Length: 206
Image (tube, one colour):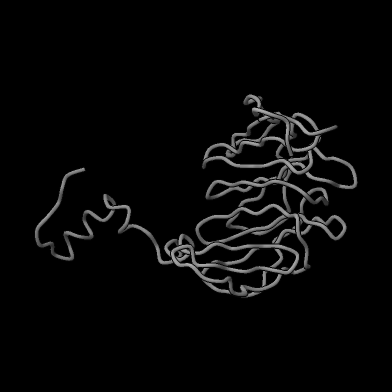
């Protein structure tokens, strides 16, 4: 990218705004990048990432629970599933306004101890415990609201796995199948289908 310097008119700044990522961030994105939301059975709390200090109350779930899977975009956070049943509830919050969560819809199967990950547009909720171990993977479109749709399946039923990834892939590692596993598998977020083998963890763990 060219090294622009000197005095710019407003017209010139607008002309080159797309070249400067820092200038191209919406207020909602800036706020979302500056806070972390912590969810547990006690509700939702927020902390400022840039400063040290205690958390403050953000709001409550529509139905208090823990052990759900969290993901989101730069404007909206979503938690699916959780204990107290288990439950099929999906809630969402808007980062720019503290307050109680709003009902988003339902998972295809009620479960807890799930893992989740998302791109900026689509979120996946994988595995969990329905009363027995589940291989179900659901997805939702983050900007809308509605019930989850079946995405595919894990390689084996799995509870308490870990999820991570990029805007392209969700990677699921470890967890409990018939016992603790070293399996790593992945999904391409923009498509649907069953998991693909990624490799193995250095040891079995949940």
